Image 1 (tube, helix red, strand yellow):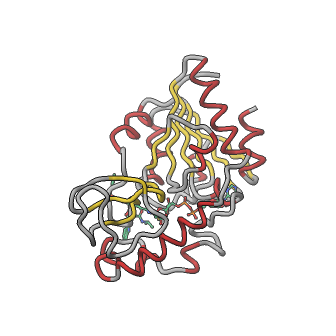
Image 2 (spheres, protein in one colour):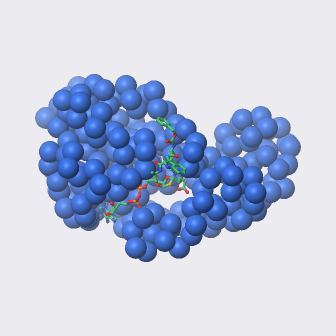
Length: 230
Ligand code: BJW
């Protein structure tokens, strides 16, 4: 098989690496209020609280390792490109498990937990383990302007031009471990369908966007993704 493949991953692919999903019954947004932690308004009102939340997530990520699904996608990328196809992995995840497994053609549309951004000089750099409200920017040295390099509700996701371009010409679209509830990612399957792509969904359960897909593979990503790739 070859052609132009776009893969969209969500929190479900990282769940078996010990990172929580958002909307499952034990997910992050069941334990924490997203409006108080994942919006620019929350950061403006209580930056200390928001930094504390992301510092804890960063500490959790420091010990997380990719599993068989991440490895299978890295292998698929190499094989697909070697056969002359186009490939793009779009992840909504802020973790770096795809990179740890060897993926290269990937974009983090919701940012990266291990990076921070300075709102004064716009530098994006590796985040220290603990960012505080008084941590100075490594470039401009101003304190009080660092924020996690992630995309909060109401903000524009990253690399959208590249992603839309890939979706509009794709022949295969695969969504793995995402609930299909957060836009614009939730609309990607519809764009791929209009482009004439074959749509496959891999998930533990049905999602809001399941009806758009041609094929469904039900199961945990660590088993279902390697089996689909082989
Ligand atoms: C398994 C598994 C296993 C489990 N194996 N599967 C009201 C207020 C504010 C905003 C809005 C609003 N109403 C609408 C909006 C817009 C909003 C939105 O869509 N809201 C919806 C809730 C309605 N969207 C935005 O604000 C976005 N920006 C935007 O739209 O800008 C305008 C624009 C338009 C068009 C083009 C361009 C721009 C920004 C969204 C930012 C989302 N940010 C977060 C936090 C990131 C930082 C952080 O990590 O803290 O991103 S929220 C969270 O949700 C995170 C995720 O990437 C995202 C998606 O979640 P995901 O990955 O799908 O996880 P879950 O938990 O929902 O699902 C897990 C799935 O895995 C489930 O299906 C399980 O079954 C499955 N699973 N274990 C396989 N082992």
